[in-house]
Amino acid sequence: MTDDGERSTPGKGLVQGLAVTLKTMTKRSTTQQYPDVEPELPPRSRGVIALLEENCTVCMLCARECPDWCIYIDSHKEEVVVPGAARARQRNVLDKFDIDFSLCMYCGICIEVCPFDALHWTPEFEYAETDVLDLLHDKNRLGEWMRTVPPPPAHDVLGEPSKEEATAARKAAGPGAATAAKADVRRTSTPTAGRPNRAAHAKPEPPEQPQ
Amino acid sequence: MMPVWLELIIRVVAVVVAFLTLPLIVGQAEHKVMAHMQGRLGPMYAGAYHGWAQLVADGVKFVQKEDITPRDADRGVFRLAPLVALFPYLLVLLAIPLGPGNLVAQPLDVGLFFVLAVLGVGVLAVLMSAWASANKYSLLGGLRGAAQLLGYELPLVLAAASVAMAAGTLSLPGIVEAWKPWWLLWQAPAAIIFFVSGLAEIRRPPFDMPIADSELVFGYMTEYTGLRFAFFLLAEYVGIIVIAALTTVLFLGGWHGPAADQLGWLWTLLKIFALSFVIIWLRVTYPRLREDQLQRLCWLVLVPLALGQLVLTAAVKVAT
Image (cartoon, each protein chain N blue to C red):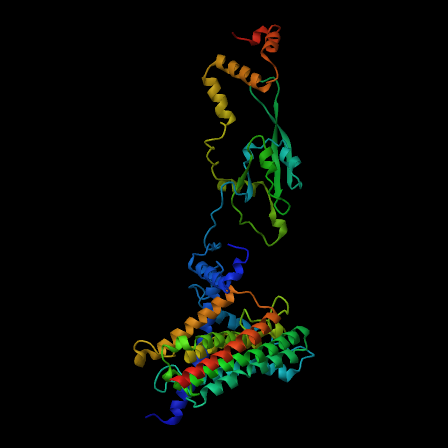
């Protein structure tokens, strides 16, 4: 279109405007009828946090990492007598595990930081309350959310294999292959170390060189 | 033959029924058409099926609301204004012919004159509500409305005069009788002028500067609540019907169409609804004009065009 293109045909814009609205009218609206029809949430939707109590060791990592301190944990120690052992073992027992969802900002750090997968995202989001105090979910309520935790999404086919898979593959290949893989990692991690330098290094530590 | 009084009652009741149902249909159509043109769904709950009872629900809501008259308002005038806004349209509906052969509530020899005169009363309602509200936004809206309605009355009347001159009668059924399909071309500028200034007369977007909710709160309707506000809204929807009906009767040949003798009324109604759709369509598409653009469009475009159309009509009339 030229510089004075919009001046060339008066009323063109008016007609185009009419065409746009008419076209929009004939298209289907994308409105989601939410309360009647459940929304299709994307995978990994952050609705509410579920607690798998058996996995929790009361390490307090989640409570400490929480940016707004909305996780409250109480526990006591319990003696577990193991037959055959010299002394009785001590074990942490969870008394209280509350998450205050009126403070939670759904950052997911607690879930990321949990070393034993005791916390999970679930896509449930309909837990609004008329009283803000009811947004404090105790460990029973957090445990109930576990039923709604979806299975983990499939692994990305192009991504690198998970730690478990890589370890299993290495073990299956035998002990020699495992050390070779380790040496391979070291070689790539220090690219500045040249070949003669590596040879010099190799002399003082012969047990690491299998060949 | 049925007695005169029975016939009179039937006609009046028919007009009142039309007066109460047609605006509801148009209003519901506006809700849904506007929604879909904006990629929405519009009302979906009232009445279970696609929100068909939304306007009924709105009416019930408006009736329940408190009827407030501001303390400083001119009580009598303030309370009368919504009725003055509504009543002229009811009178106009009386004179609009639906089909051939006396299918009109009140055939008038000076129907066109009567209709235009009564439509002009609308400006009075705007000024009454604006002045009596004792509110600066209402007053500004009213002044805008007065300037707009007085300005656009001129092209409206000139365009109507053109078709009256072509038909050689002021009677609305007479004009439809005289109408020929080729008038669509001959009277096209007049039709467009009449339709556009009709839009301005009923203060529909893009000519809603007297209401202009982004600058004047709600213009002359700012202080109105409850049923009186509902009357103003109803007047707006009846206004759509009236302008669509007048354009149909004057320029689109009213009941003319296949099987006009039996289905004439259907043709008229179809044309009215088609034009109502166009009115809604224009509302969705175009932004509101600025006040100076509004006056410029009226005085520098529509009035000269209408005068030109008059000359053309006269020339063709003399030539044939």
